[in-house]
Amino acid sequence: MHAEKLSLSFGVNQIYDNAEFNILPQDKVGIVGVNGAGKTTLFKIILGQIKPDSGYIDVENKTIGYLPQQIEIKDSDITVWDFLLTARPIKALEKKQNDLYEDLSKNPEDKELLNKLSDIQEELEYYYALNTKE
Image (cartoon, rainbow, N blue to C red; front, side):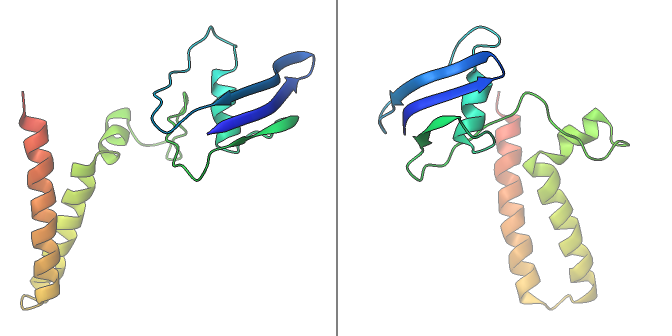
C-alpha cells in the first residue's frame, strides 16, 4: 500500500499536506497519535469513505479490516447483551442448527439436510472448544 501527495483539509484545519508513505507486504504497521491527529480519517480515506483533496492511496487489491469507534445499532429495542450475542459465530450457527432440525423433522430422509447439519455440528464443536480453553 502506498500514498502519494495526499492532502486533506476540513475548513481551515489541514489534516494532511502532501503526505506520502509506502507499506511493504512484510511490514507490520501501527497508527498512533493524539486525539485529532487524523488516524481515523486516514482509515476512512483508505476505505474510500472520505475523498482526499488531492493525491491518492493505492491499497493494491488488499483486504483492509476496520472496526469503527461507534457502532450503529439499527434495532432500538435490542439489548446490549443480545447485540453482542448476535455477532458471535456460535449464536448464528446454533440458529442454523435449529432451523435445520426443524426442516429435518419435516423431511427426515433428506441427506442434504443431514450433511449440512453434520457440517454445522463440526463448526459448533470447534467454537465450543475455543470457548472452553483456559
